[in-house]
Every structure is written in structure tokens, then in C-alpha cells.
Amino acid sequence: MTNISGAPEQALAWISGGKKAAIATVVETWGSAPRRVGAQMVVSDAAEMEGSVSGGCVEGAVVVEALEALEDNETKLLEYGVSDGDAFAVGLACGGTIRVLVEPIGEGGMPLALLEQLVAARQARKPIAYSVALDGTAHSLVTHGHEERFRKDRSGILEDEKTFVAIHNPPLRLCVVGAVHIAQALVPMAQIAGFDPVVIDPREAFGSAARFPEARVINDWPDAALNDLGLDARTALVLLTHDPKLDDPALLVGLNSDAYYIGALGSKRTHAGRVERLNAAGFDPHAIGRIRGPVGLDIGASGPAEIAVSILAQMIEALRTL
Image (tube, rainbow, N blue to C red; front, side):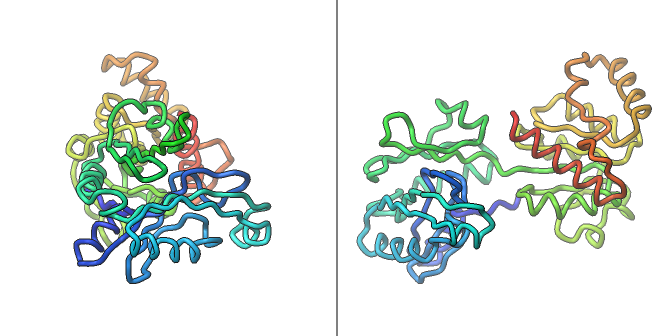
């Protein structure tokens, strides 16, 4: 199972351990706010905290408000101005304003049963939206009706100005076929960017825990591994072997999936041969056109680390321009 962690999971873990918990969510921003709408922080009744709503500018104040919300069993809607000085401290040129919704789990806030359903959906990689009245009087989980928000991964306040919708898409995932040097550079970079990486290579000498200590490694043929994993619209598939015996079976799975990004290493000549084989296999030009080959943005990259940077940048570009 994918290793997923976040505010909902941490809140449920604390509650399961006998503590109380409140979730703070950024619901609106103006100016250069340090965190995007939907960013979350969870606070326990022991003043523990995980996550962030401002990059460090107002976390302390939110913790105090969350502790009060837990004691009073009430939802709070807070507003903070982030000064230019505080913004500069977290790497921004100027400040902004944020509104933060603080919800205790249980009485006066998000029902515990709803939190459990939300965590279950996230663990199952099922897109789901949490709809909540800003005054804390109504809560629901929905899977339809917010298709544009799901596609753009964009939480926000609805036009009624009374309801906030938090989009919980499946965590981003990177499937790398070929445990080569570029993969060793790409995997940790992708993890920093928020991707959950899986490395696939039937060659155990390449695909080993020693070479990829922080990633899941699968020693199986790519098509079998990818079919078992399942490729959804939050998955990037990167092929790094430029060996048709390994890459082509993976491409067949990828092109028949909803993977949002498919990239394949190799020269223009190598890619031309790849296109010929896929044409012969019955794929039309539109389907084949989904493949980024040669993989990565054309930034003149040299060496494994720079190539990894170009690949990750292209993955992010594809994600943010869906």
C-alpha cells in the first residue's frame, strides 16, 4: 500500500491514541501568502503540531486558537496578515493575508466518522472532496460535482461565500522503470517535490534497496508491476532503460492508462524507432504523442543529476498545465 501521510492521517492517529485533534486549513489567500489554499496543519490537545498553514509566519497563533477550539468544541474562522518582514523570512518578496478554518474533530467540528471515511478514501487513492460550511454547521464528503477542481487540484470557497471545498486528490506518484543512475538522482528530487516514488527493474543488481533506500523497489517485469500498481491520473511514468525489452511493455500499459505524464529516455533516433514499434502495435498518433521523448525539458542538461532535474521540471509542468 502506498505510504500516505498528511493532516487527516495524523489527526486520526492521535485520536486513535486517546488524544484530541483539530485540523487547520487555509481557505483563502491574498497577496503572496506563503502556502496555497488547502494547505493543512493538525494540532493535538498536547500542543503537538504537524504540517503548515503559513510556512512559519503564524503557526504559533494557529496552535493557540486550535487548542481553544478543542477546549470549546467549536469551529473557528481566523484571518491573519503576513507582514513583509515575516514573508521575507520564509523566502517571499512581500506579505499577504490568509484565512484559516480551524475544526476540532468530533463535537463542534468535523465528525469522526467523516474523518475516518476521508482517510480511507485517501489510502485507496480515490479522489474525494470535503465540503464544509465556514461556520462549521455542515460537513460532507462528495466524489462528484467538482470535476474542474479535481482536475486542477484546486480547493476553494464556493460562489455562495459560505462553503469551502477541500480537494483530496490521490498523492502524486512516480513510477520509474529502470534503476539507473538518473533514477538515483530523480527519486530523492521527486520525493522533495511531493511524489511517492516506485522503482521497477527486474535486474536485482540495479533495483536494490541499497541503491534506493528511500523508495519502494519492485524486481519484476515492468508490465506486470505496473498492472499490479495501477496507473491513475495522479501518476507520472518515466522510462529510463532505453531497452525495448523493458520500455515497450511498460509503454503498452502506460498508454492504456490515465497516467498524466509518460516520459521515455533516449535519443531522437531511439524515439523514432519506438514510435515505429508502437504504430505497428496499433497505437494512433494521438496516443503516441502522449510520450515525452526524448524525456525532460530541453535545458541542455548534462549528466544524471541535471537530466533528473529536466525530467522533474517537465513532470511538474505537465501537472500544472492539465
